[in-house]
Image (cartoon, rainbow, N blue to C red):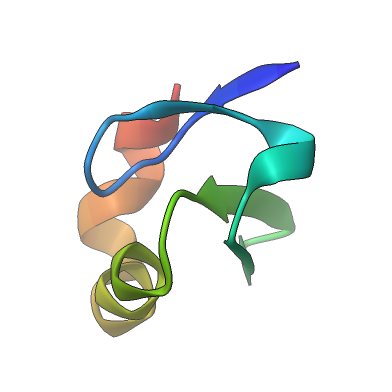
Length: 51
């Protein structure tokens, strides 16, 4: 299943995600650790962009 990295917008397969993060009960998937770090620093800026 493809998901969107909320930071860079890249579409990735869930099982291929390099990193994940939880925010408000939802799991977000990332193409890189850099994107995860950016998300964790500003989750409210990115949470709505994941859809």
